[in-house]
Length: 371
Length: 268
Picture 1 (cartoon, chains in turn green, orange):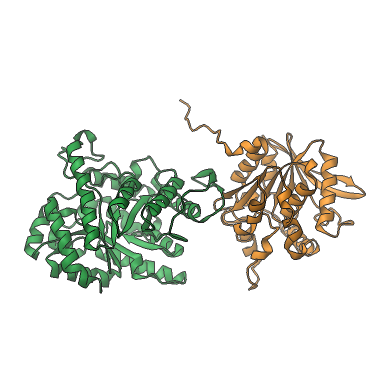
Picture 2 (tube, chains in turn cyan, orange):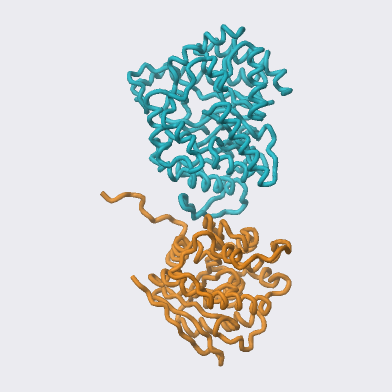
């Protein structure tokens, strides 16, 4: 297996009353932001030195959970601090920006800046993101597919071309630089929904599974593999990425104690749950994904209420090194994923987080690579 | 605005060339594909005719125009050159669809005095090099889907008689006027074209792959290429509105067609 560390550049806790979304930026504290940026960039260096395969980041908006509204900006910074690991953008939300060619340009530049280490995630985004740039969620699928085709063409077509699409219009496209990796960098799309899994299989690209749980992820991966077989190919394990939070402690008890408070203050309460519900029930998912619509109607109630339940459902990896190895093994066996994208931010204090990262790299990763 | 599409004919050196005409304005000569004149229920001639004078000649051997003395593509090109000279006092804008592409390109090479600009819409001139390997013959329904795609725009769908006419045209003329050696003589000369050329490709064209049109862009310095996303081969029908918009902009604005002049402001 391969292991990725997700670095969202989290800002940390915000003392806002009401837990609304969007989070009012009157609570933005420059000093706290400075520390968040410094922590993130220091940590990625450490993760690189510890031998993680990918250093990942992602685009999210209007949120202190992730200070990367333009993920290319963060990824560019990572290229200068991460010397060995791949730079995995998981990913850019390509239906949202209105300018897919700009994403093609930025990703190509990051591939050049990193000497060909880009992993390119081209995603639809979580439902609530559609409230950010005023995009109709019912058009999410068609915008995504057109943007995807346009980005691939911008990376591979070596003569200038124009594009007259349903959503995007250009008279001249001829990007410089092109990606270093030829013909294309490794590409992943999000695949929790059936439509997305079918799309990834049809395009013969990797599948990223996030903000889900183990049974749903296993079902999505199975669907993806079945569709890939229909299209005449077989994904490698590395083409299935499962993302989830993790905390590794010296012992199970110690690790559980560290993350236990997060179940009292789950991220998925209040405004962001409402925002997801509004969009998910406005045509964001296709007809074949009724289960997902139901889930997003009340996402908060779907969250595990204890560490033990979360481990059981595969929404977190938590424990001492031995337990964590067993949990990783279970992901590998039940989902078939060849890459885990791990979020170490549940530890709270930076020193605990760093220790967790170190324990995973030194005590778990060597044996887990053989899975 | 409702524009009438009228049937007409003109004598070209003893050959009666039948054509359709619609609208007023800059003259567009639409050079049809292998199936001959487009189905009457297609709307693009009428729509282009709202701003332009559109002429749709049936070339020798197609529809009601006799084949006459024409034996080669170049013979047909000369008949078309005489048709243009006779019917338009000014240079015309050629819009060449599929098999009409080679005719349009030859006209631009041999008769630049007649041609203001050239639109090549899924031109078939060099497509044989990319022909798929022989396999099971597609059904008529499959061919129609390849031509017109998932959502063709019709004023009225083609009748059984029209379908027979189109199939008959294709069968009779593809062999009669197919160019030997893959239009290598045209390939050697398209670099002489100096007028503005717009190459339009269908993103879902399963008959003429975009790669087969590449020589036009590579050899003609004044050639721009644009892809209509999701459009099938017969783009005037498969993607009527974007195709009519692009052709209209190119004809009206020449080299300025690349400059976006559409306002993004919402009126208050």
